[in-house]
Image 1 (cartoon, rainbow, N blue to C red):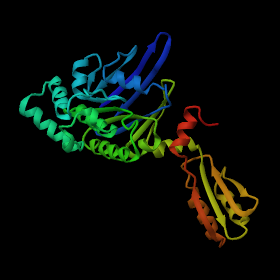
Image 2 (tube, helix red, strand yellow; image 1 turned 135 degrees about the horizontal axis):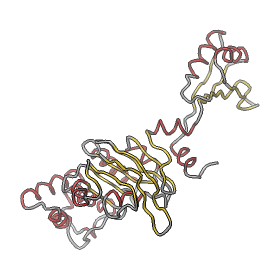
Image 3 (cartoon, rainbow, N blue to C red; image 1 turned 90 degrees about the vertical axis):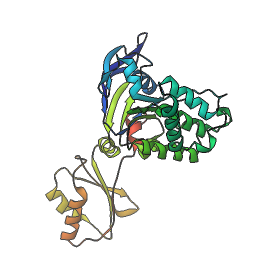
Length: 310
């Protein structure tokens, strides 16, 4: 649905986005992560034809950014601070936005009714926008972005400034939208991305660092298979058997005050270390009290790839 090839955007001699290539599949919710100033908003402004790329190209549903009118028809865009005519009521605002997209009369009324129901706006349709809470104004922005029934939705920090209850509601709405549409969602709120996105990419200083599912990103950040285990009694025989069957395995005592608790690691993050350890323990009758693998969190990945971790 979205294909970006070597996108660049310069301000003077400074790159805001540099050689950025990625794709978002049809019917997928993709998270765009990065620290402040990473180039997230600039990337979205290029994809929505608000800013032309300095070089490179991108396509939305097969249409080049050079054909900006056709691209805008295919994209629904919610910027970080969604603009609205605050002196209008919700219905009048949506009527105006819909008419700008060429929707008229019965077709426009049907779309407003449909989007109002989808975004939970039915009981505020005739209230002025400046009387609404930030959460409802965000819903108005979401409804406006979808009036023309776009195939692709691009949301820039859609939950900024919302309270926890409103954040949960917007997340649920985005998740529902992703069932039928392609969604590109920008955020630096990591739990939000994990909650709603199928895949995610992390950019820093305008460059792509990594892209994949949360599990794939965790595996890349971890760099090795790591297992924590606690035995009931001495376990040296278990480790002797493990070293005989598994090359490059490492064993370290976790805590001198917990003499039967160990960290076991292997350079291959996908190695079935737990299975190998279990078989070794069964072979010599050792009793395992606790065993769990260590997973790198999305925060660990983010910090490692954007200079926030050691």
